[in-house]
Every structure is written in structure tokens, then in C-alpha cells.
Image (cartoon, rainbow, N blue to C red; front, side, top):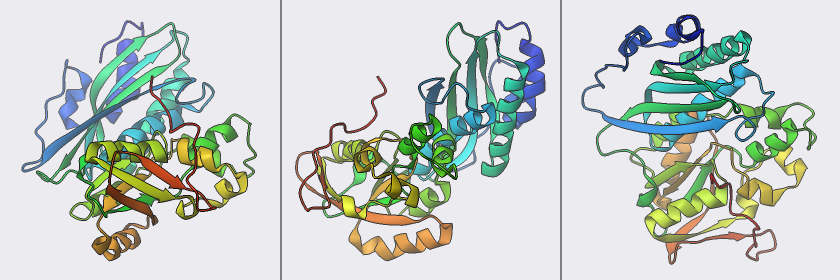
Length: 318
């Protein structure tokens, strides 16, 4: 790790070296050196988070770290991959207090222990702007088994894990714009639950998968485009938490994003296997629609049986 901060090496030694795995070489060299597990394909993904865009500037640093790591773990889950390690880039204003680094590294340590991976290296630097973070995660799958977006088939069912809409509603709650008496919604926004166990269980069952980060409808449209299919989902079947139902913001739940649930395609004949995987992992799943032949498009059928006209398909990164 390199930086122009005066406390570069002290910070690396105090906050990041304890997180390093064997391949990181104690963060003392310019790159990591490690041997992937034999007979496994590497899966690599990267995500960035910027204060004021992907997290609130006053969010606790340990939760910021855990969200950064977990959003990347969710990408591995969507491909049915097991985590291996990660690279981290941290850009912070010079005036950032040492307590921020202590909390940030503690959050990473907690989730490294929970999900079984280590830091491999990265970079730290100063910035005049808001805190900017980037994480590149590495995982592994058996050769040729990674779940992708382009494998859905006509007649496949559309499934989703967990509940939808909590992340978008949680942002409103965290900003004080929506009641959240027990903190459930804001917690769902700040601390995603990557569905790694379910992703692993879906290998050989699902035809296609991705995680719901930009909004259910928009992410489903990504699978449709990659697979060359249309899809129809039904609002009445979308799994909502009690807090989301109480908020009564269906369109936001469908388009808001930040849920980090798994969205996947599977043939109807695998329904029992999917439900068995759900029971084995303790992660709820719900069938919400069907893929069919046709131009890539998502139709959402409302409670009244008519197609909904949604103002926005989901989050845009640009």
C-alpha cells in the first residue's frame, strides 16, 4: 500500500497489516503473491463507494467498511463463488481522524472473520474531496460453473431471495425522511446480507443470476438483455418486509436498489430443489414471475392485473 499521507506506514502497520492474509506479504511489497486453489476458476469483481453517494457522511466507519466488503461479496454470491481475498483502495481527506481508521479496520476485521477471507493489498491516499473507497474481491468457482446473466431460458421462473425494497426505504429512514422505529430499514441499508450460501447452493440449479443492487426491475432487465428474453413479474408476489409494507411505497421498492438479494432464473422443474436450498441455507426465496421469448423487456403486473408504468427503472451509476 502506498500513500502521500505523513502517517502512511504507521497506518498500514496499525490498521491494515493485521487484516492481511499470507499472500499479502505483510503488505510490505508492491503486490500480493498467492496460488489460487487447484482446479478452481478465479472470479473477480470491483465496486466503489463515495461518501454522500453510496453512504451517508456521518455513517459509522465500521459499517461503511462492512458495506463496502459486503456489496462485493454479493457479486460473488450472484455467481455462486466462494470468497478468497480482496484488494482495497482508501482515499480520505488529510484531516480524517485516526478514530475513523480504527473503526474502519475493525469493521473489516469483523466481516473477514464472518465470511472467511483476508486483505491482499491495495492503496491509501489523500483527497480534497469526500471519502472515496474501492474494493476488488477475488473468489473461486469450479471450472465452468459460474452463474451468469446470459443463461435464462424461455419458460424459466424468476426468483428472488429475501425481501425487496428495504435498502431504498432504509436510505430514506437513515436520512430521517421515513419512520423507522426499530431501526430495521436503516440497518438493511447500511449492512447488506450477501447471500453466499444460497449462491453456492444454486450452482447446477439456476440458469442465470445476479444480485439486486440497482433496483429489482432494472436488474431483471439486465438478465433479459443478456439472455435475449422478456420477463413478466407480479407485484402481488414481490416479497416485502413488514416495514416495507407499512411504508406503502411499492414503486420505490421495485426500482430503488441497495437490496443485495439474489435474482435468478431457473426451470419450473427445479422448484423443489430451490426450496430445499432455501431451507438448508435459511434464506427465503420467492417465485415472482416468468421469462418468455420476446424483446428484452420487463413487464410488471400491478395489484389490479394491469401493467404498471414505472417512472424509473432503477439506479444509474452515471
